[in-house]
Structure formats: C-alpha cells, structure tokens
Image (cartoon, rainbow, N blue to C red):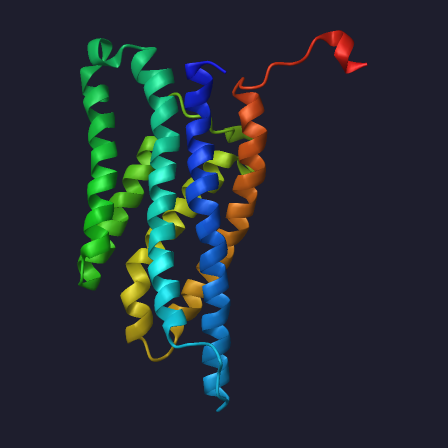
Length: 224
C-alpha cells in the first residue's frame, strides 16, 4: 500500500475506530434511558440508574462531534488531492482556493460555536452555517458523489447523517425545556433515521473503496 492509498483509508479507519463504537454506546444508553422513563411513568421502580440519561447525552455529543470531524476529513482528502493539488488552484484560481479553505475553517468554527451556544437563536444560526459549509464543501470538484445513484451513495448518506448530527446538537436544550415531549419525539425519529444511515454508510463505504481504485484485481489465472 502506497501513501496515496493509505490516505484514502484514513477516513474509514477513523469511522471504524471513533464513530461506530460510539453508535453502539449511544444506542445502548438511549434504550436504557427510554426504559427507565417508561418504568417511572408507569409508577414502577427502575433498576436503571438516573445517570443513564446524562451518559446518553454526553456520549451523544461526542458521537455528533466525531461524525462531523470524520465527514470533514472524508471531504478534505479528495478536495485536496483531486482538486486543489491536481488543478494547482493556488495558481489557477486563488479565489476558489481561498473559498475552500474558508469553508473548512467556517465549518469547524461554527460547529464549535454551536456546541457552546446557549440561546435558541444562536444555536439555530450556527447549526445552519455549519450545515451549509458541509454541503458547500461536498459540492466541490473531486468528491466522489455517485450522483446518478444518489439513493445508494455513500456521500449523500454521509452528508445527510452529518446534518442530522448537527441538528441533534442544536435541539438538545429544547428537549429538556419542552413539557409536551415534541422535541424528544423529533429527536427519537431523527436518530432512528441516522442509525439506518449509519448502517448504509458501512455498506456503501466498503463498496466505494473498490471503486476509488484501492483494490487491484488479481491475475486472470487466479479468477478460475
């Protein structure tokens, strides 16, 4: 494996090490949190400790952050290799080059600001800006999108789940303020969709590694 091929698998390596274990932990805590809530609502005593809810929120925040980071890394590699370096953008189109750099910095900065924002207005603003930066970066030349088969596209699944994770961070405070449980139900629906997309990510990501020329076919005589 050469350096170029290794750079291709940095994104999936980080996803396997940093994202998928957190998905399992968050899902486990989410189930326990719901079971405890239902038991208390029914007037029963739950053996699940009260700390499970806080653990779910804390690990959920880490999962959202990991997804955003891994997604940006997944976009960074093809944009740099297939667009900036291949086209020598710093010489041929300095405005585009500067714009891409600013979008990466903007996505990171606005997500950090979203993470620490307290008011609903600012969380909405920073979530929108962070999501827009991810979408704009995904539209740059060099990104492998599979646009003709968007319904089984690793890129479209990835961008969608990243936007859902940003949205989840934006509504955390509203979940605990809303007595009607509307935001909690939205949170459940959003993250069930995200879980399905994560499963799709695992399958489409493995498939796309072959199509991005990581795999070299064996000699013809070995195929028989």
